[in-house]
Length: 80
Image (cartoon, rainbow, N blue to C red; front, side, top):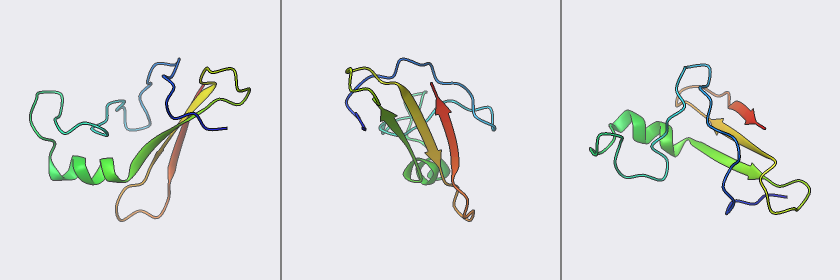
């Protein structure tokens, strides 16, 4: 069962590109400036889904999915 309102228990870990940061859900980047066009494209094509398999109110794992424009493959990263 999906529980999008819960906070994840796991810390973000770098993916295969070495990046764990994201502009998703934020109009401004880390330095307070708007993200570049490329960042916006990547943000539109990536999302995080949280799962609470045993319905105890805590997130059991988080799945990150990203899709780079021009590439038909989705990249998955699951964090317990």
